[in-house]
Length: 252
Image (cartoon, rainbow, N blue to C red):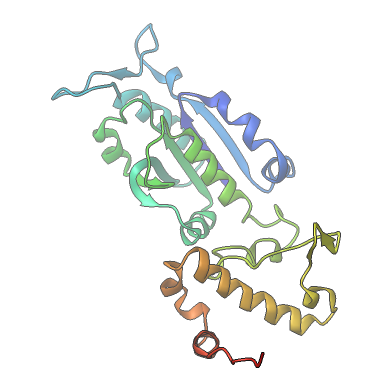
């Protein structure tokens, strides 16, 4: 897979994307990520990429021409139609389902805006789709683009050691991930759950599943409706029964 990033700040990306798992994925050839400086495509001697918006308002707006020429130069490098994504707080909010969709594409171009945004005409001309990483505003699209690169890269074949490295994580099946523990068995009086020390794989899997449902209900109850097919009717009934079961009185 190839990802190209059009940005005013290409130097922001190398320290992040060339580290850890994504960095190894790039080094081993499982994914390509290239950055392109939009400022190099300006047609004025001062390399200016912004101007005041028509109709007034605060701030500056990125001009259409440098963005368009940059993207067209990127597109000329491959005989393939890329999917062009503009990182924008007005876009569809990124989810794991969206990540999987993007990860299946052979080529993505991510456009990073700055200042007050970009001239709408270039978005229309390039047929950009808009994507947001959350309902908040950042100073530019660079950090969101890094998030997309990281999320998409780790799903490429070979980047992670095996499918289990991502298929059992939060959001992959509509649930959050179950709690996890490592050595020592006891820390500050808190013990690892006995089932995880039992060696009984069937019981461990069942416990992990129950915990995933419980954690999702407690931390993100809004996801429980969306979990839909992820939770079986039997699991729903068992959980409802356990909540409704009265506490038995004990003799003093």
